[in-house]
Amino acid sequence: MLLTCVSQAFCSWHERTFQVMGTEARVEIWEENPKKAARLIKQVIEEMERINQLMSPYISSSELSKLNKSAAKRPIKISKELFSLLKTSQEFSGLSHGAFDITFASVGYQYDYREGKSPSKDFIDKNKSLINYELIKLNKKKSTVTFLKPGVKIDLGGIAKGHAVDQAINMLLQEGVEHAFVQAGGDSRLIGDKKGRLWNIGIRHPRKEGEVITQVPLENVAISTSGDYERFYIKNGERVHHIIDPRTGKSSSKSISVTIIADSSTKADALSTTVFVLGFEKGLALIESIPGVSAIVIDNQGKFHYTKDLNSY
Ligand code: AMP
Ligand code: MG
Image 1 (cartoon, rainbow, N blue to C red):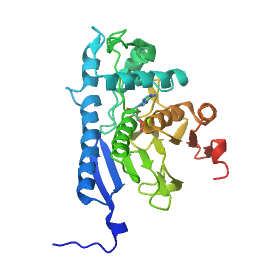
Image 2 (image 1 turned 135 degrees about the vertical axis):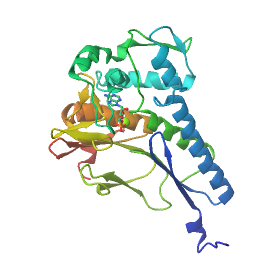
Image 3 (image 1 turned 120 degrees about the vertical axis):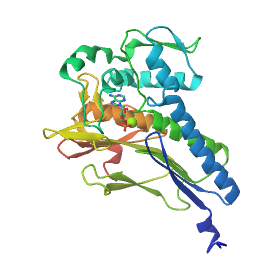
Image 4 (image 1 turned 180 degrees about the vertical axis):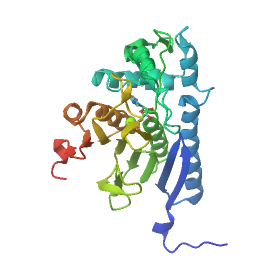
């Protein structure tokens, strides 16, 4: 079948939805050359899948799995890319006094939200002290990682999707793309505007599936939302979900949804998880101290809170 374009403007938008990193991902680009557009979309998908193979805790050959298997026994040499993301994760842990902590997985790996399973109180009590980012030792010169105690495990679920989106966006920028949208689950980043108008990015309604609670008009930024509705089960009326308070080893209950707007997706991703755990008071105070970052928090009572720059909005 021969497809003809009604208008050049319409035909220059190319889009694809796909699955990666355990979530739905999407790319939209403006590109007048259809062959180039197809190549770029393929490259975006391959780049995100490459990162999945490197950082997934569910793939036994991933670099991350190798760390979880052996880094408590001896220093493990890893790629510059993973090393750099571990270093960034440590920086967010320091900034948030441990609210963001990839060693949450020392307890967190025992949760199975699909099966409705949580670790026992005994397991949490025994292993909670292994949630401590200071137990990860990074050696920059040798590009190695050591865990200082047996039982320490890490998981990059709170930052890796942001990194993957940044990688895809940087590739598109290098290829000269001027208008694009890349999304992996709750993490999105935009290049430019949507050809003369702003992108409208919807924030999911935390309690009504398929509905958006608000739309944010944006261009040229990253936006990430962390919510307690992404992976959860309800037991005895209590919501057990995937964002863990490192101090308790249990689901964090201060927020139900946190959205961060920032210049990079890695930053927005890490900070959305961080502010979720901190709650709106400490969380917004932290965000106000970081130039160029905005936040929208829905607290556990369903009340909205914003950083000052969004008050007029
Ligand atoms: P996000 O959807 O970006 O908020 O990330 C949630 C994911 O981050 C979870 O599925 C976990 O993999 C990971 N995570 C949970 N709690 C924490 C925490 N306190 N610090 C860092 N990562 C976390
Ligand atoms: Mg996050």
